[in-house]
Every structure is written in C-alpha cells, then in structure tokens.
Length: 416
Picture 1 (cartoon, rainbow, N blue to C red):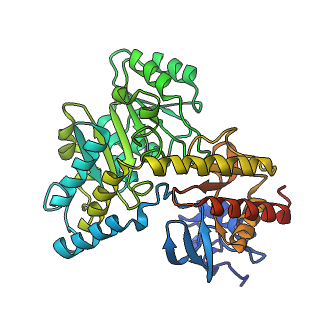
Picture 2 (cartoon, one colour):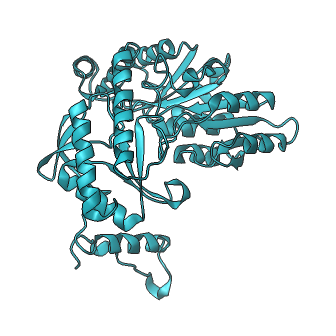
Picture 3 (cartoon, rainbow, N blue to C red):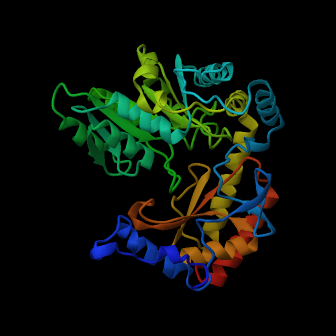
C-alpha cells in the first residue's frame, strides 16, 4: 500500500457491478491519493499534540506558531475565561443532557444571552450549540416556501444549508455587487417575503462587504436583512460588534448571526435581534428545539469572554497592527494576496495550484508555522489559498518570524 494512503480510499463496487454510494466521491479520492502519493503530509489531518497558548502548539513533535485558528482575540487561555469554565463544571456538571426548551436552559445560558444583548445593545439573544446551527436554524425558520432569499454567491456553507432546509426560493448575486443584488430584489414578485443575507467579513479572502449601501438597497426594496458577523465580531468596529457597526448601519440589521468559536474562543453560535416577535423563535426553530444545549462550562466561558471583549480596545488595535504588518510584509516579498489592503484579521495568500499550495503548506509546517490550506469548492473562483488568521496575542517579533518563514518556504517551493 502506498505510504499515507488508506486502503479504504480505493474505489469499490457493489455486487452485480452497481456503484456504491461513495462512488460520487471518487474524483476527490483520486485527487487526495495523488497529493499524498509522494509522502506529502495530509494538510487536512494535522494533529496538535499540545496547545501551549493562543499562538503556539506542538505539532509533529515540534513547537509551532499558529496562524490558522480563528482565535482572533486570543481568549482561549484568558485566566478569567478558564476560571469561569472550571467553576461552572464544578457547580453544574459536564452537560445538560437536554434541549433548551426542556431541561437544557441553565442559569449560565441566560447569563450568556444577557452578555450578548449587552454587547450588541439589542433586545433579544438566542444561543445555539454551534455557529453553523445558528445559521441553519434562523434562516430555515424565518424564510420558507414562497419566500425569497437574496444572498451573496460567496456565502458560507451554513448559510446555503439554512436556505435549503427552509425551502425558500434562493437568488444568488455576484460577490459584493450592489447593482446585481438590487436587480434581483426588483424581480421578486410583489407581496413575497424577502430576506437579504450578507456577511461582514468573507472567510476565504478576508474581504469585507459594503454593508451600508447593500442594507440601504435591501430596505428600499422591502427586504429584511441578516448579517453574519462570525469573522468580525470582537475585532471590527469601535465596540467589536462587527462590520455593520463599523459602517454605521447596525441599527438597520434585523438579525446578526455570530459564533463563539472565533473571537470568543470557545464553541457555540448565536443570533441577536431587535424584532419584537423574536422570542417565538425558541418554539418554532427546529435546530434549536431538537438539539441538546451547550454544556454549562462552555456558556460560562463564552459569557465571560464576551464581557471582556466589551473592553478589548487595546487588543483590537494591536490585532490591526499585526494585520497591516503581515499583509505589507507578504506583499513586499512577492506573494499574491486576496486583498490589495488588509481588511480583516484574515490574509489569504493565493497559490498557483493545489499541488504547489500543499507543498508550500508542508514547507511552512516544517519551518514551524501552521496555516490553513483552502481549496475548491470552498474557495471562490477555484482558487487554492493559504489562509492566515492573525491573533491579538501574536507579538511583533512573531509576525517578523512568520514573514521569514514564508520567504524561505516560498523560495524553496518556487512560489516567489
């Protein structure tokens, strides 16, 4: 058997020559086989043997700088956050073993929702077990058969899946194209329910949406607006409320979706809203009603982290410094980047193809740097990317070290 390739990856057929249900994955299996055939480490199966801090871990037995974890504000090792989780574990046990509408709402869940309402200065907050589930639940519940959803073509998979589950008519438009969005809105039949879905920061290239103008157009055409701020919450905006706050249009957003697995530093998802009827969602949103609630220790860490992010101005400023420095350094060394200027904590380095992207990823790992390798179909325009996610806990010296690693690896692989 070829090293690094599982025998189970080989195509099979059922008795009688009929293909099995895995046959549709054969092209991807072949692509993976070719990628790993020469001893290339699998970029999608890395094990972190030990995590030392928000910015460092032990991978393959060596200390590695983390530049691909979405830990934007570095809250995973905050002493107050850890202490809150330990205390909740002692006081309430390891899990709720129930749905939020049954026995799964503990004091901590309410406190977490209160922290979110305070953070966003909104009337309602609803906590889900994951960010994916938040999009799945909210979108599928508020937009159903006979309604129309107008959304950016580069929307996250959880948004697309929420649309599919709700069975609304889905009308995509070209990425960040305000005119295209407006044309599609104007074609929707009169009297139909309309929901526009946007993201503050798009996770692959790290670019931001022109939310102010897009929300204005949506409202002029009678649509409600949902904005996913997963990659901007905690970091972008004067109070860390995201791109909508930064562009001065948060009050015009009907629903803000977010996650705890990025700047908050734990796991879970949420929706905040000022809609007066929002609380009925707790009874009609199936992914909320039929899923066990988050463990007490998780909501305790989330609530503590959210309250600390309200006062995270210095960390936000330092993260912007890191983003500008890394972007400028990579650009000056000849790398092709996803944005002309840094727009978020995500910096995407565009690779010529998957093979060289994987080789570059491995070269960086051997240097002691972990980044994300992103490939189609998750990426726009069939691009292969090395996606760098900066952290407020990265020091200036670490950013300099990272730039040196990129330069050496890029020259070794022939990218620059």
